[in-house]
Amino acid sequence: MTAKRTTPDFILIIVTLLLLTVGLIIVYSASAIWADYKFDDSFFFAKRQLLFAGIGIIGMFFIMNIDYWTWRTWAKIILLICFVLLVAVLVPGIGMERNGSRSWIGVGAFSIQPSEFMKFAMIVFLAKYLSEHQKKITSFRKGLVPSLGLVFIAFGMIMLQPDLGTGTVMVGTCIVMIFTAGARIWHFGFLGLLGAGGFAALVISAPYRMKRITSFLDPWQDPLGSGFQIIQSLYAIGPGGLFGMGLGQSRQKFFYLPEPQTDFIFAILAEELGFIGGSLVLLLFCLLLWRGIRIALGAPDLYGAFLSVGIIAMVAIQVMINIGVVTGLMPVTGITLPFLSYGGSSLTLMLMAIGVLLNISRYAKY
Image (cartoon, rainbow, N blue to C red; front, side, top):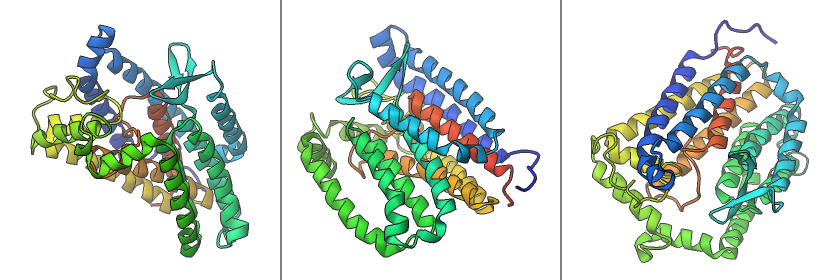
């Protein structure tokens, strides 16, 4: 192992903290009305998000100083624990159900979402597997099938909750990692056809998923039902114009857009800060991805490179899906926007993952 750099990637730290700061401000702005109505405390969601951010930042800087090879040593155990949690969340009395999905486990006054942590566990384990078996990855039977087999088992367990959005991000992230390791394109083409068939079956098997697809194609077909969220999101983005209506001046957060502090927070941000504000946030995400790619390219070994690729792919896929949903380019999937959306498990996981990336940057040559 090469000697550590004196400091981790400073730009990555600054960009992460800027995104987190924007997120805290927008969470308060988006949730104040709803929180005051439901909890008689306009700061309810903002205070909890600040707590999650504080825990996440402490975790990020702590993990930043842990040798990233430690995750390789514990990869199997971390993955096993996450599988146990995925089973536990399905057990009545342990798992908590919200909006028709049993995805949370209550911990005192808070709750954790095991599927979020499974994304990170799968990245850690797959980076270990690919670094040890890269020469086999060009083989469909010896390389690709074993690496994807475990991924789809985890995906199947996540779908039992069901949580298509988180499962999609996990699978997409793993596919990017495997492709980066050198898997053949035609293998992905074959699996893509099978995946398309399986995805179609998942959509057809659940009427609410079919409604999401049809509402994505034409939300005005059912404006008060399946198309409601997309329409209200577009009603928020449109009036924002170039400079926005002003921070705190959103109209859609007045009970038009359901729970705007979560999946559709970017719509409120665009309404209040306009095209300029939304573009600046996207620019920050681009800077974060650029630094991550540089770290991956400069990593001193295959494990560090694959681990970096997995973390960056997870962030990138989640941002693309969330923005795609909010702007009406993709069906509603229930994916949070990293660092901005309200949510303890998602925010903590993302900051922990950035901590791992920062540690890799201390060894990277760039």
